[in-house]
Amino acid sequence: MAFPKKKLQGLVAATITPMTENGEINFSVIGQYVDYLVKEQGVKNIFVNGTTGEGLSLSVSERRQVAEEWVTQGRNKLDQVVIHVGALSLKESQELAQHAAEIGADGIAVIAPFFLKPWNKDVLINFLKEVAASAPALPFYYYHIPALTGVKIRAEELLDGIQDKIPTFQGLKFSDTDLLDFGQCVDQNHHRQFSLLFGVDEQLLSGLVMGATGAVGSTYNYLGKKTNQMLEAFERKDFSSALNYQFCIQRFINFVVKLGFGVSQTKAIMTLVSGIPMGPPRLPLQKATREFTDNAEAKLKSLDFLSFTGVKDGKPVASAY
Ligand SMILES: CC(=O)N[C@@H]([C@@H](O)[C@H](O)[C@H](O)CO)[C@@H](O)CC(=O)C(=O)O
Figure 1: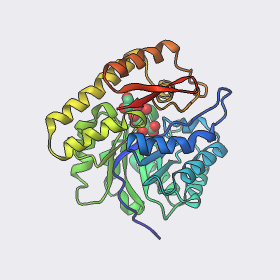
Figure 2 (figure 1 turned 90 degrees about the vertical axis):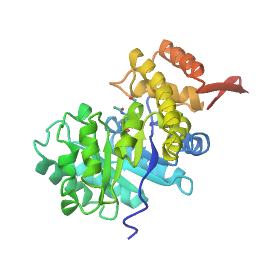
Figure 3 (figure 1 turned 30 degrees about the vertical axis):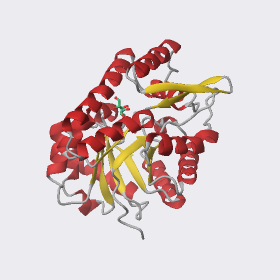
Figure 4 (figure 1 turned 135 degrees about the horizontal axis):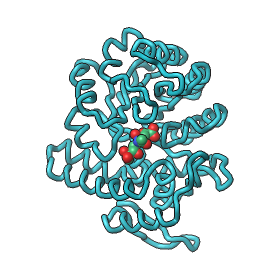
């Protein structure tokens, strides 16, 4: 058993699930997408079927196929492919966890069930434990995103003693702005080899100061290169440059948040920046408006995040800085 695997660190792109205009999954562009992340953005880890990937809006069969395609296309190119297998049904989650192991994924992650919710830490751990046990050779990550799940059990509390219950527990994806909670996850587990991954891209520098070992996010699909520059500046203790990078990234995110920003808009921005068609989101999400995309494009250019380098097949070819 190859466990524990190499520690998951650095940037992890929360992948988009590309779709065709009629709402089917567009598997044909996933190979190109992998190359884009690696070559253009310098991002070699991915988090599949999460929030950005509309994982909870896909059928179990689609989730299996998407996971398989990313693992296949990422082989010998990506460092780690983590599959989000969280679901409301424990059985479905277990099926997806087992499938992730069978196809050779590098890890699995699970959110808290969010309709009939666990009401305390022990109940949540019991759920997670049952899923983790279906893939006993795979590193297991808890995906903490209380604003979307409504499950407010603090991550620090959850982590306390978790490896006694879930031996494959390897870390946390922390998508919340509570830096007291995140800081305490780091502080109380500094002697363990956990991956503590921060999930709020516009605040990543604060997460790094607090001790994040990496980050998972939607903007690393198209701002990975810029964010990697921030990580490098932080690493060499050039905090003033790191802060400049973070402020630049914040200027963009702040701008799009004011226009209304979510998965649909992420799809539109990624299509624009990468040139790879991500298609529309699935209902209940609505496609981003043309006005949004035009405004986002102008902002990316004004921040020097994007330039158009030529024309291919009659279409402008963009490149991200
Ligand atoms: C609520 C949400 O979608 N948060 C994003 C962030 O990357 C977010 O898009 C970014 O910080 C901009 O606000 C990620 O934490 C989600 C994520 O990693 C995922 O798709 O699973």
